Image 1 (spheres, helix red, strand yellow):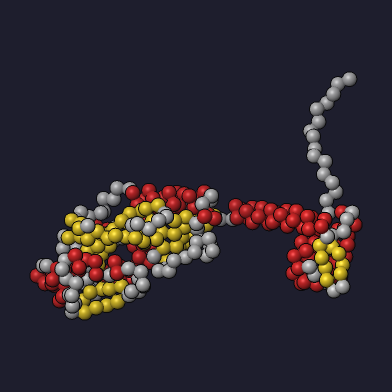
Image 2 (tube, helix red, strand yellow):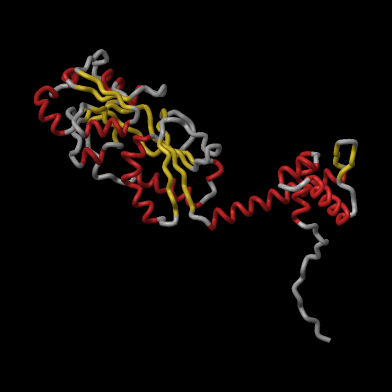
Length: 320
């Protein structure tokens, strides 16, 4: 007699229908058939019938029916823990399946200056390498709570001694202007003190640091009390640079954000001295997004772009 090898199947008890488990979970949480019905769009009597059918299927009572109240039996409490865990697992599996089937997205938050001047001009290289990833950029000066706000990754401008994140680069600051403004000014931009005859483009304070403004550079050159001929204020750094490109005044340049504009001669630096900023740019990945390949790829691309040799970066003397 020859024995045939047959696949083994795990014997499962007859499981109750899913809709009865959903009704039971709602009733167990609310301890009310009426409120459970409101949650799952059934009448109170329909929920009661489903619970009764479930108890008959299981062979034990799930609730003690009190006067105008419900209470779980000991067996009902244990069964509810198992039911809630199973339903949560199914819900996670459905969400994950839908997410994987949909276009993968990476939601990025950063400052308007970094987004407009550094990130967006380089973004096409990432899109070309990862055509199935939809990058969504949220630019603002506020700090997002990454997981809470549905953000996958942040590029933040923060003090160099701040904990957390992977460093992209530091920065240096120095005056810049449109070439025609420098030509029109002639000898009036021969020394830093000549800035007193110019319109300075300044950032509105955001309660964070004066380093986005002129204070650091002017103090380093002994010009903390300088009074310019005029001042224009802006709420974001990319707007300020657009005004500089239009010849509306002298801006405090921040390298490497403006390096491409300098290399293209759209902006020029009247003075050679630069001042090193005690702030830098770092990448922070949200805890809930750390395991997603598309987020890891974007973070790696950012780091590689920041560390790649850049032929557009101009030379200059930087003060600490």
